Length: 265
Ligand code: ACM
Image 1 (cartoon, rainbow, N blue to C red):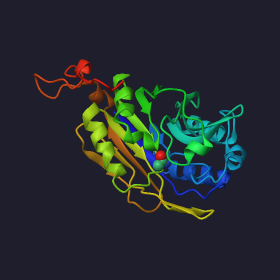
Image 2: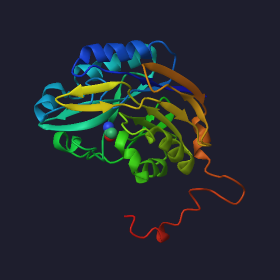
Image 3: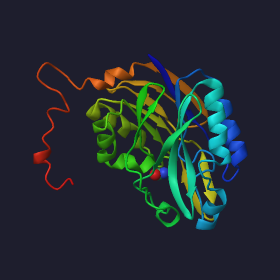
């Protein structure tokens, strides 16, 4: 059994040190094997220009990843956390995966960019990745990737037992979609969403919160409220996700018929 969970935070735009220490303070309130943090948890979401992205983006040796690594090592907790990544002169909306020893296992770069993210970030070039973290196969997708069932399906076909979903959701029905992603793929999904409101430069986003953990049978194990900052944990057996049989005659992966899915790829 593994203890897995999420942090739901409400960052102040641009105050990276404050946001990182607040999120780690929330994380330190629980004992967990794996914790997921929201999309762009350290910077906030509402970037107004590429210049702002350039000022706040960090590489894998930067402040945010160093703080996360230290926390992971000191508490033996694996982490997945969203941040604005700098790679040379390019910027990605990324999530870093860190194991329980504090070692950076890699990044996933958001595949499907939402709205003005298209003006700020490069489309992700990593493909959908599954990381071995604390004995769990953890696939990662970021926020708007939920709109594309292919994202979660690709991760599940690659062997993900848990899908980590760092998010800044802006549509009220979005958290519920992860229940479908769980049952159709026979996996656990951990949605780590942010809460609160951001208003900058005449723009406004209100975030949906309601982070959750759902099991392969579509049971919601824990869920945060829409408002406020929270950390929650559930105990799961990740191996349950390896069995795709739903009765003696149906296996949801063996029953797939890709030759009938014309036009999908
Ligand atoms: C989103 O993809 N952050 C809505």
